Amino acid sequence: MTTIIKASEAQDFLALVPHLTGFQPEQSIVLVAFRGNRTCGALRLDLPAADATVAARRRAATTMLGMVCRIPDADALVPVVYTHASFTSRDRMPYRTVIDNVLTRARYSGFLVRDALCVASDAWGSYLDEDCPAQGRPLELIAASPARRTLARTAEPPRLVDVEAESRLPVPDFPTREQTATRYTELDSLRGSAELGPALMFDHSFGGDVVAFADALLVGADESVSPHDAALLGFLVQAPALRDEVLLTWAWGPEFGVSVGEMNARYSAGEDISMVPGAMALGGFGMPRPDPRRLKTAIRVLRYTTPRLPRRAQAPLLTMLAWAHWSLGSGTLASRWVAQARTLDPEHGLARLLDQMLSAGRLPDWAWDVPPDATAGTTIDARG
Image (cartoon, rainbow, N blue to C red; front, side, top):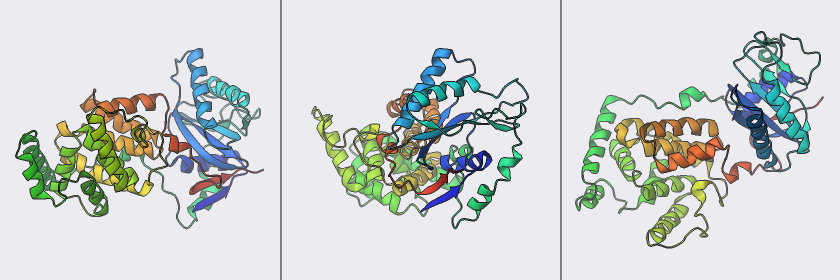
């Protein structure tokens, strides 16, 4: 269901922007894209470094506008800067040179610029408002916006994600952590041993079927993952091929998971699978949007399982968390999990790949598949 809120004043628009991104942006530039009068997407990117060169700022602006160009039928935008800087600490609005570069690229690309706004630590203002006071406008105007109250009265008011909380693992209870870690260590000690197969069969009736095991974890995710299942998940995903089977089963279902296993077998046999449908799914190419409900459930499974495993085993699961958030379009959370994974294992292959893509501002192809009738959630109708 889409909730449409009218925003006739800049402060009303600013009151709603966090609900387009899903969280309160900080030290960011948010590019809000429009299709006609209504929003059709919001992209959050890190602000360029304060000491960035002129050339670097121009490259950043070009990259930003290139991302907006990928949103189908987007024809206008509003850039919004969120910064810890203040109006009173300088003689002009913060990050004006950054916005000037963005506005130049936007107009060159044929976008209508509806406004360009800044929310600083002490005030807010519009870069396009010649009458904006030097000290900015009071932040209280945003907090008191009628649009925010209207949104709060909707049947299902959207909840803003706490980025700090969502990018930290919960603290596990001692009994399940000990049981999971002990079982993982037992499995790990059998790695490469002839005893491993019987050991896995003893715990599960899946007949060695990784896809069936992965899918069953989602079905039972409303309850806590058992220590044996958590240990087995942690053990399996240490192998990149099995990690991919689990992750892509979670994203697109067991049928696709089976095909991933077949592709991995062909690749191991020396075949070129680059042109096989679905071969580039992990890199965000050639697939429809994955099922968000399955991925959100997978995130719960990973958040529960990861802190119960020994630290030496956590990097693959942290990377899987990053990939799941990246697939859902949240580069912000994905980058947090990638950083944690690379702290444990700087050379982890998938973590390194995701880090490179996130640094380049790349999201999966399906992230740009915004339907013509807009998406479920909050949409701003900017009129007046």
